[in-house]
Image (cartoon, rainbow, N blue to C red; front, side, top):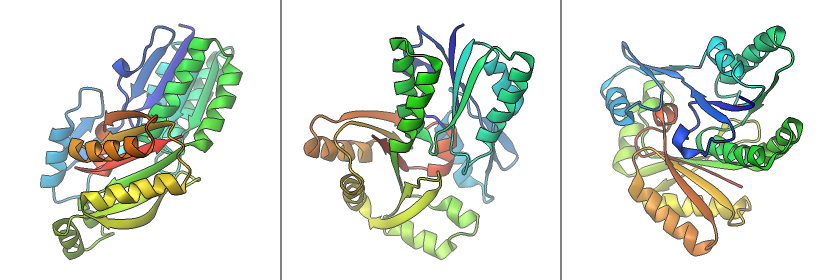
Length: 279
């Protein structure tokens, strides 16, 4: 195999989402622990089952990133590999992939392996991979693709909208009473991805309509020009429909893709959560 694209399961794409004739495409899984049970974040993971387990478990769950060995097995498969990870400031997945790159290159120095920090998650990685795939199909060199990918990473923006606060309550960052009241009042917490790859709380909105309005304002404020936008949602198709309708009304030519969150993003966004990335 000449080309391989590898990402971790923070990316909400599955293999069928990319035309892979010109390259291989693999997502290496995180492992999620809820109580005494572990869930491997493979393509077949039932996120409804995962969410039910989270919501019925009084303890905070945890996640473990892919090991260097798992990354290394993928890096050995092709002459040229581009790997994209969740933000290094949110997980150890990036460091794990870098360790794997060093191990493989020590044994096979002729291989070309790049490990890119997306400084984001979910739809941002999906958006980046879509462009990397197109560049591979167009015949660009390994070096040119990496240079362009780095530019894209720093031009993408991400906004999060959360309607469930169970994890915040369980890890002590929000009181049970505050979490209960926020949920009863239909409050949404809105955050954005920072340039450093962390989550920065931007504000709150009451009700779905308020959250849509807040997101639209963020798109205006941060310069969305009606180009590409990907929405990942955790079992909240109704909200996505309302948001998509408003975006299309304001930016008629916008290229909008909707994805369902896989395990890791479902774990952190929780039921009803939305993640949006755009250029």
